[in-house]
Image (cartoon, rainbow, N blue to C red; front, side, top):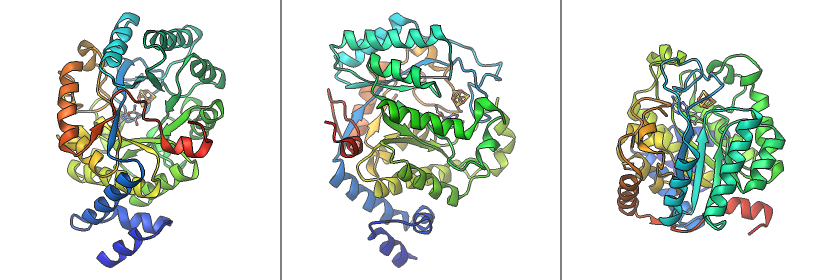
Length: 363
Ligand code: 5AD
Ligand code: SF4
Ligand code: FES
């Protein structure tokens, strides 16, 4: 087996079977995969880690994904929306601390007023920072017109996870209706690209019913769609969701974590110049999960800037870290952690996806 892994790691292209082999590496053999990923990372994107200060703008959501703690159907969730002033304060903090970029994330909503409110916020952040803060949005499926308005207001990257790339699996995790349609989500990814965003997507890892073959297909999906950025992490159960009843099918959390880490490493080997996030969910299982992800290929991290009083309410899954800490504590904590992982923080830089530059020729 060790010879097989070594020979796959020496290849330039990878079949689904190759990816399954790498993702199935055991405790001993996965070290080979991690070492290769580290080498590829240092060669193609270097050891810089870029910050995206995270504002969890609101947990209001019109959708009902079966796995998510802030789904519309969870009547136990206490709903909030961060005020304009609080968003601007967080943005100012990011700007003054040289974070380079922000991510604005929220449940999925639509409506003229909402679209306008976001547009206004983007413009205000741009203005406050003399155009220097980069803005990534993670606000779900929207019309081309909405995507264009937000883009023209100044956002230039967008994250929309496909969640699972296999259309046959998609209905297992989502209600069967137009608001949760696989093809509609895929179309939204095309729209984002057409409008001109750097496009990010991602999946959850270790879901019930999901196999290693499905995960290999997820990686091939990212490659086929020539994605610029990926954020993915382990699925973590949440009591007040329909998915909870399938928890007996789950891998133990540590195994889910290592499967996620292998996904990050194999993705780095497969798509050498993209941006990959060390996601918060990695940290929910392993106290140094994000650092481990950075070591094996991730180069983006999202320090939480959501005002502390709201953090407990943006609970997508159990054991979410950083709910008691404020922006300053997370900043200090992360800085130390990244240095320990051998990374260097790209202060004051956007840290755009090199892949985007390579595919578009734009600076
Ligand atoms: N476990 C892990 N990730 C989750 N997300 C939602 N619910 C969960 C969960 N239970 C992720 C989804 C979504 C992102 C905002 O959070 O992938 O796109
Ligand atoms: Fe809403 Fe996103 Fe949660 Fe689905 S995953 S319920 S769209 S916040
Ligand atoms: Fe938030 Fe460590 S990053 S407490």
